[in-house]
Each structure stands twice: as structure tokens, then as C-alpha cells.
Image (cartoon, rainbow, N blue to C red):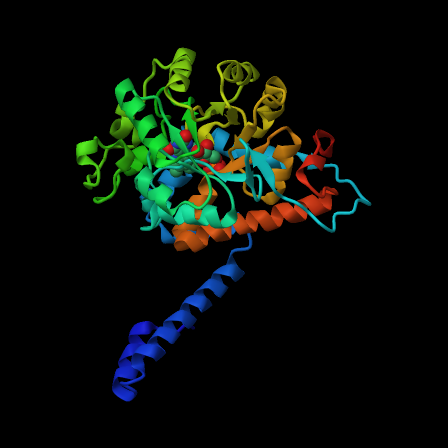
Length: 397
Ligand SMILES: Cc1cc2nc3c(=O)[nH]c(=O)nc-3n(C[C@H](O)[C@H](O)[C@H](O)COP(=O)(O)O)c2cc1C
């Protein structure tokens, strides 16, 4: 049992008034350490972390983070595909020294795992995106900041110690999009990730049932008009559909990707690819990278698992640009499998949110550290000392 701080204060106030503040602080530190130890014993992997987050979060927030579109078939498939794939490990390889690092768009990162763009981090923890970007910096990897962030891009960049990329949707209001790109570039983001699987919001029925809305005091602050920036407003509605439909444009085509590229010197990465022809076309239109993604199964339900379409997308890209994958990455072993099938790196979405909800920055660090340890062990067991020895023949049906 950890000591209850209120109880200690009462006891100390009665007995040792002079030393009470110091003792109280030590007791608080000890109880926090104890809580962390308990968490560490309880959380062996990211699936455990989700359970702890679920207990902490209000139902509406948990459902918003966890849910997929319609029947959530793709949500299950994203995971199932990783579980189906088998590893044909190599033996008698010297794996006593292992290097997990890689380079992406000219930047070295400590491991091939990025933080995917996810909305509304303050819904998970009051420190929101600041906690996330600090954890990314500590882990030596890239955070992709969602355009639906609850912290301004400028504040996030001030806290960043590793590259940050910015995710955006091409808005109906092209002037708004142009201004946002200029703002993001000025703030110091290193790349843009344009999400293209979103002509409309997918229908997440859990959100509709819960009448999902942002609590008072939270807002997608990067999307407020400049004269309202800094002010806190509440954006609400029954699910994402009503509240944020103004920021999408169902008429966006490849021409708009060309237009976006013409606005900026930043590399543009295309997120939301599920077909080889679209992978190829993205590169033809000047994309500096693609993300094989189905938006964490939140858009088109019954879309195939990202892992299942990865090899053909990677083949179509044929090494011209980096290929990222996200959707269902929950084990270090999954990272090995994605890299074997042609990914340069993977992104994690929900695991970051589970870490955040559990314990702010420290919880996100727990999430990425668990994955790092698992990936390191997976490399050893597969007979790979570094990422270049992860080849396609390592995996199969
Ligand atoms: C709660 C939540 C919010 C998300 N918000 C965005 C977003 O604002 N922009 C975007 O491009 N993708 C968004 N995504 C999709 C993620 O970038 C990513 O594709 C997905 O989460 C990966 O799957 P995983 O959660 O299984 O790791 C979101 C996903 C979740 C779960």
C-alpha cells in the first residue's frame, strides 16, 4: 500500500511540524516511485498499456482513440495480419552487437519507429502534445504532429529536440491551407505529411453513440483563425463528421498534390496508400515518401490490412523514396515483419495515446521503450545485427 499524501500531512502536522514539508515531499516521491514500479510490473507490453489507459480514460475518450470505422473489420485485420506472418529466423549469426538506427529523409533516428499523427493529445493527458514531443526527442525519433493537435505547432517546436513533421489535410479553403503550410514551415517542421485517405470522415459508430465532443477548454488550435489563436473554444458535435467536416475537401485530386508541393520547399510525404498504382503515382507526383496506411482502420472499413498490401506498394516504389507503414504495430516483432516486407520504418498511433493517458511523457517513453526492447530482441532471435540484414526471405505464410 502506498501512503496516502493527505493522511501523511495530517499526521505530520500533529507530530513533526518543522520537518513536515521535506518528509511530505519524500513521501510523495516514494509513492510516485512505487506507483511506477507497480505500473512496470503490470505493463509488460503495449497491450497491457492499453488496459491501464482504458481504466484511466473516460469512456468517450477511450472509444474515440480505440475505435475504427463501421464494423471495425480492418481494425482487427491490421493486427491479425501481423499475427499470421511467420518468421524464418537465421541461426549462427553474430548478433552480440545490434544497431537499431536508420536514416530517413537524411536524418538519423535511433530506431525505425515514428510517432504517427494523432489528434487531440490533451484528451489523453493535460500535457498533451508537449509530453509527446519530449518523449519523441528522448527516444531519438520523429513525431508527426497532427493538424488536429491541441497544442500549437509553435509551442510543440519550442519543446522539440528531434525533427518534427507536420500532418495536414488539404482544406476546402486553399488560402487557409497555404497559410498553414507557411506557418508550419516558419515554425521549423522538417517535412509535411499530407493525408489522402480522407475525402470525408469515416463513420466511427462508437463516437456517434457517445456524441463525441471535445471537453470545454480543448480545441484544434492550429486550425483556429489567427485572430482567435490562443483563445480556447470548444468544438463539438456527434462524432468527427459534423465537427470537423469543414477542414476536408472531397474534390482533392493528384493536381492538388502538385499544388501543395509548389507551395513549399519541405519534403511532402503522402499518407494513406493502400494500392501499388497509387504508391507509384505518389512518387511520380514528387512525393518524398509514402505511408502505407488505412488511418488505423478509421476510414474505409474492410480495407486490407496494411501489412498485406505493403509488399506490392514497396515493389511499386522500388526504393525511390522511403516507405512507411502504420496500422496495428504493437510488438517489436511487428516492426521486424514490416521492415522485412519493404518498409523503411513504421509509425505507431494508439500506443502513444495509451502511454500518454497512463502517465504523460513518462508513459509515452514506456511505450517506445517497450517496443525498442522487443524489436532489439526480435532482431537477435531472427539472426539480424542491423536493419540492412532484415530481408524479405525472413518472413512468409
Ligand atoms: C485517435 C486517433 C486520431 C488520429 N488522428 C489522425 C490525424 O489527425 N491525422 C492523420 O493523418 N491520421 C490520424 N490518425 C491515424 C494515425 O495517423 C495512424 O494512421 C494510425 O493510428 C495507425 O494505426 P495504430 O493506431 O493501429 O498504430 C489517427 C488515429 C487515431 C487512433
